[in-house]
Amino acid sequence: MAGLIILLLILWIIGGIAGLLIKGLLWLFWASLVLFLVTLGVSFVKGLFSQSK
Image (cartoon, rainbow, N blue to C red):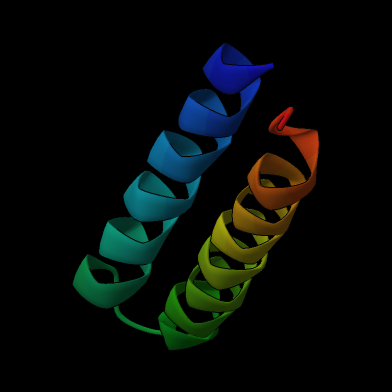
């Protein structure tokens, strides 16, 4: 599961960089940023609740 999250984060970073570099794809940067933050948030919350006490 951690590998999938890392892969998604890398894909969102690549998409964001492409959105900044290619003229007319600024929307891709914003979409990638939102998806990156959502992925981080979901993985953080999932990590909080999966720890055994």
